[in-house]
Length: 451
Image (cartoon, rainbow, N blue to C red; front, top):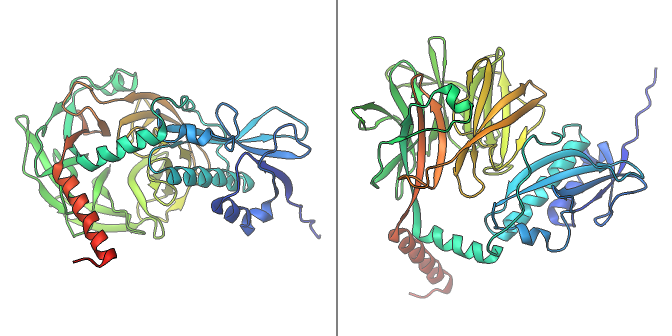
């Protein structure tokens, strides 16, 4: 029997102005096979056809004059974007997709990020992969200093300040934490600034040791080391992975008698699952995503399958959560039906290993709106299958503003007895400014031929 091919649905697309990113997306042949888009940037409901409109959470179109300027680089440094559908003749909105992106950084970068997210929403909706409305609260209204002034202030801050991180522990119980009780007092192990810092703690099951990133303050790249705690101090770091490339976030998973380790290595295709031997040797198990650049890969097991949560750096540095799954650590690894499953700069990027208590699964995520690793957003995962993902925010763990690390809280893991975290403090670094000025002067000399 001959089957009649269904004609693509005609959809009016509005709420966004033309740009190179938008025009490239609209000429995508895959998109054209799914829907026929009539690009009418200024159209609003009601419309004579199905209308897809890019809007903010308050219902304003993204291309409203001055709207993006008002959001750029202003508190809370986050903006919620929606793709909303209106049926013909209707003014009742139906949210097809929703996400929250960061607004810090150069203005052109922010505008490009808005366009990329908007067209990703359009493409995913056309292909039947839209995520629907988010369970998270929309970002608050933009406020504070004008964006240009705030950006200048932030640029000077970056020139003269640098980050100092430290590991810490707290004895707060799992039930208390998931009930929103906070972290209690944190014992910090390296409050004083030195030549290198430790961050990204993960337990090394069966040894009482902690794997973490060891990062030089100036020059060099991160390496994976192991430390142990005794008498309130940490041992000298012992190298586990040091090969000249940058490595961090050494996520671990105990599976029976086997311990797996998945360090972050952001070169394309370099995300690798290792078996961690008792002597610290790493043995290759599987290369997970040969064509992707993945940040903070987090391996866990749930409902009989193995999962890897990560951030796809080709989509954004801090605002997306992507998932892969497999029947075994050796693979084959498949991407979730939605890639990414979540877009939210306030908690999408992984912030440590997932853990369960009372039969419920909890996922820490990084709040990177105000700064990288500003806080840890703890979520309960309420649905996780190859085609579905949902989670709800339980609490946000913020740094103690009166403590030695008031500017960031980045990782949350449990070693079976207590929680480990890492904290951030900005410290004055005159050498950083000098290196930047010297580098700029050298580039100017090279361009002008002086000297």
